[in-house]
Length: 621
Image 1 (cartoon, rainbow, N blue to C red):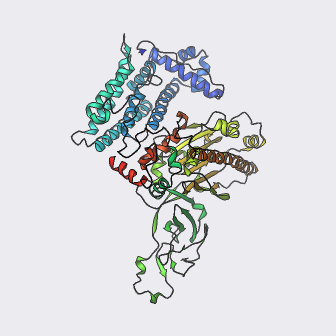
Image 2: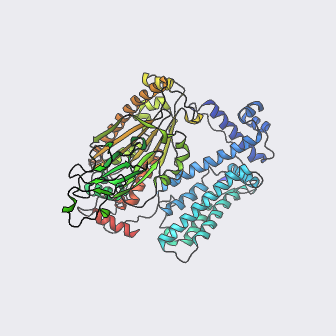
């Protein structure tokens, strides 16, 4: 419980690893929160903030110049802290709308972000929002975003549960009002706020609307949904991670191949690899073959790399140029760059040939930041929608204008593909597993996933120089990139796209790579690097050093994948647990479970039953 008329001291212990300027700004913002909680907005002055922070008014003015700038920074700080917590809890909840609604209750009544002081400060800003456009921008955006999300969750639960008699939109808005108004009760004089009672009130509201989903037996306070598995699946509850059998079972691999990879976006290359008409690049993946070729009109198109005559490849190499037409090397059937069948040797010998119907079969193609993707089937979200939370930041790097740099890689490795993706999805292993990265970036590695289907993490180069030559030289020689903002000139950003594409974006170059399954115990990793044209000596050196660093990191990651793959093939690992620092792994595994519900079984169904049980579980949902 928290007393309504007692506002806690907001100061936190200093972190020696935090840059001095960032620490000072944070301390001043914390002092401002404390002042607003005590004195209100109008009663908060630079002098009072300085007094609480035990600093001079000149220091406050140096960092924020005006009271208005300080107040706005404080509002944005409170909003971002709440938003980070909201995304973190929602991420752990996975894709289940029932668990997500339960998670929203936990966020709104989490004392770490919703204590009396912060509620008072937020209420003060919200009260001024109509008169101040800058406050309205922050407060209004959060209000609208959260209400829209709750309405969408109500609609999803109503849809799945068959609640045709209710208005989920109106009820979702009402629930948002309940969540928003209950915390303000802690501001009433002379009473203590009971967080657990507030949570219970919200759960009772949900249970009155959706009795099956939110009955006491259905959902525990932790937000864990009741076990949805049908008869025939293992009765034992699954471990928090995916169970070991899904990494080694050939039948499960076949499901992944058909329902994840053939329906997901797969990376082919960068548009600069096919700059001229007739230039092409290919991709062989999960038993399919694709060719992407630039037409005479300058447009990139994708086709199955399969001749309509007798199924030969129509182009043989990974990249190349077709002069004038695509000509099958087997019998010489020729196709235009638009896929139309143009010529057939001895055409008169084909009795029922209709050339209009025998063109190459086109595939769906999409470009994101100049990177080219194809999809063999399915109708899920576009690459752009999956990565929308990162688009504004990614555009800063001008990846679309980049050209190939160095040689592409293609490696066959004997471990399950999921281990490579999971390893790439978390920074929990960096302090122990990547000492070089730790020396370069210290403890700055952080995940942030703004509600999109993709993933993002970021790390900032330390000012303290590494003791190792390659790392120290990279820190010293990395030159300024003028078109990047100051915040990104010394940082590496990582983006991930389900099922298995990743981008390592540095100021000097971008590495694009992807892992593709070849079986339950084998995969192929392929990738390429791109960079902007820059002849500066320091930039050439930085790119060479980056390559050395990345090569070492990659070698370490491969070791981890081999170790874990060997581990799940023993009797000593039925499944494991995930840290809060492994939110990217949780997000990936939840996506696998959603697409293939049989992955929720603690033990593998009997032989030849994996696909059948998966179908049964899909029908249950």
